[in-house]
Image 1 (cartoon, helix red, strand yellow):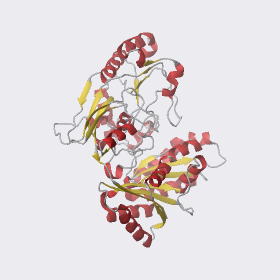
Image 2 (image 1 turned 180 degrees about the horizontal axis):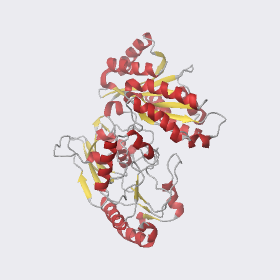
Image 3 (image 1 turned 180 degrees about the vertical axis):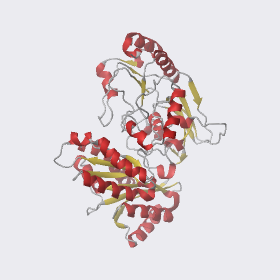
Image 4 (image 1 turned 30 degrees about the vertical axis):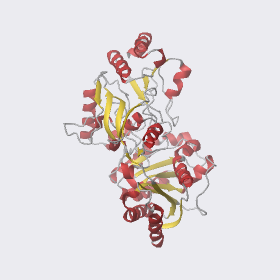
Length: 476
């Protein structure tokens, strides 16, 4: 039996002494919000939520938990899609929330870096960069509530990966509390540091299973001064891939975002969030939302974009399009894209996929998987959208109309097996940016080689020999 159940009073007293009364949450009604994931698919149990105010307090709590073998579930904004930030139902795991650790420690404009604590909300970090005329390019739908520590722990992607890369490419240094309570201080703003193993990359994408990220040094970029946004109707995903290459040939690396959106996504969006309206007069099966940016305000981005679009229309790649005439219209188009997950959540609990394949094979995946699923589950509703520019598609499924939703969700393992075989055949991944969490922990063994899994387990055992860090996530 874990010490958290055998001596919860003693454990709580020790932790309260380490973090103060304001850092401990024990009332069941106050703990409840920490126990449910954003999709409300997972509902765990915990006797205690700890909210440290600084790294030293995190280290003190982890040291106590290491001594008592108490499992810890690190939690940021709790906006994840795979249940990685909520405890299991055993009641033996405590939640460690980084919410109070939300300071920006240092801004270095000359080095184009910002040092920030893990609990800083992503939108606040973006604002801090904006105030010094810089850009922090990580951008995703949950940016108003997700926290940078969670973003790094899941190697978050978002809509600007095409130009700036995933979270892994945006971090230069990390501060991490290790499973024994020691502190790895790697907060160096260096772009070149060839002194052995680059340890920070162990913790980016590890989902809190190897340690708790408490602070980071992140890269800043020149702030774009010009922007052009287009919403275009296309024939199919294959046309989207060709259009992407056409825009990149005509506009260079100014292509910052390139999103694929199926018509089903808009139907769900308009049904549940009626403030949005169809940007085009006629219905089409597929659309792309693309954005160009430039750091020169004088550059005629709209002119370059419209010229490239004219050529695409002549080739038959684009059937209709609207170029945003104002900043407000561009923001509305992107808000539509970002609200698709929320609209889907309002529609029903679905079977979610966060897949990646080579960009060239995205159309093949969508066509092959959709045909296979329609054969096995006639009437299944496929709602596909995402970052086709980097090969990442959110390929989500809703139960056929008139069927039992719970029964369909219960078939998730066999659905994952079917789509997983196609993903593997196309050289893809079952998780592009959402992580593994507890949702896909049982599937990972079918998609990683024995050598890869063995190496991951060896690293886990070396850093966390007692298995107290976010148990049951990533590795089973």
